[in-house]
Length: 125
Image 1 (cartoon, helix red, strand yellow):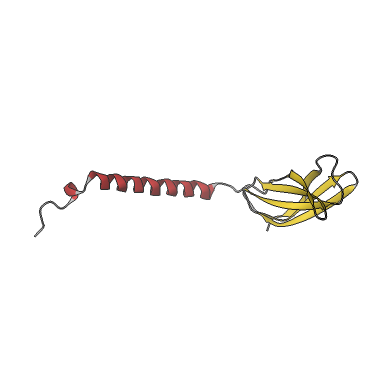
Image 2: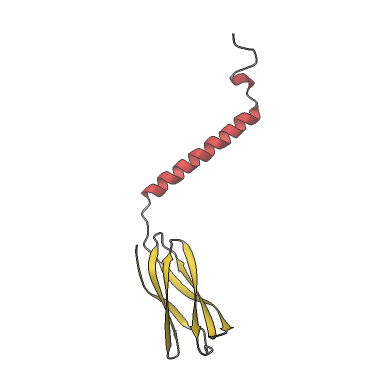
């Protein structure tokens, strides 16, 4: 025999509200994943920039930030620095999509102006 007061009529409105919010969250996540599954990934789009120049024990340290604006990961990212007659490079193993990595390059003398930095090469893993 069923007890009186149980069933859909006895569920408190707050519980209905929590269930509705949960259902909306699940539906929203399913829509997001569905759209993302059919979106085409963009290749790595790398940008390098000088963030700071500071004195170090072995010379002047040039801090460089490498940003990947693409969706795919870039591997073996080679960044070149040019300042006067000096050229230096640094290699980063990976720069994932929509992220950034930092590197430092040491120069023997203080740069007279911010050095030019650029991404020289990379590969897609």
